[in-house]
Length: 223
Image (cartoon, rainbow, N blue to C red; front, side):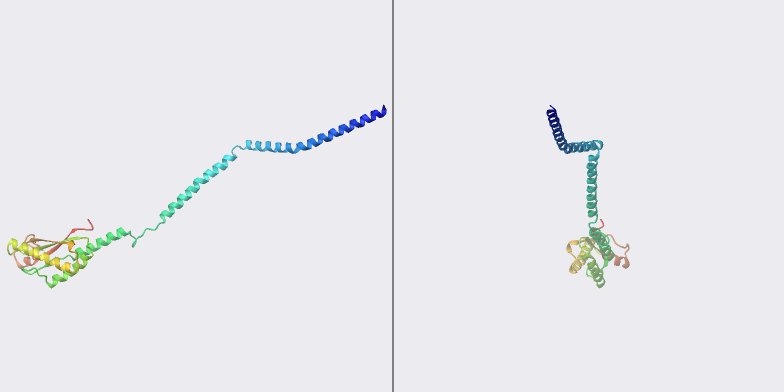
């Protein structure tokens, strides 16, 4: 009996040791699993404690996008403003053209002097031709203008005769200007005869002033 008890005790102790070893092995296998579970729980807890962390990144991206759009808009506006505008002496081409036309017209007006004739004649004197040469230069620079050439006479002679004489004087002036290169389309002629005298009176001084041709610009760059 003593021997049997000793054997039982040894077997029992052996089984207990085996169970302990088995339990220890099982527990050692569970440790990594438990570690993973604990780490996951801790991560979820942190996320629940900081619910606004993810929206902050989203809002930052959203805030960055308008800034990038604004930068592009600024660059676009800058590039548009930096486009060069062609100017001539500080003015735009259309303004420059208008100023040139006005200056040339002013010069022409200054040169449009009355041309005088001898009694009962439509021939151009040497002085008249000299005047017309200067006028022709100005007229060629103002080809878009229209100029009326009006012929006059003094009071002597019939009204019909003086009308025709005034017309011949205006025509003689036009032909001379055209011969100098002036566009004939810009010139027109008319006669007033003895009407509208430049000076009233029945004397040689008045008659000399009334035997004339006058010029009038009928359309202007200033209009």
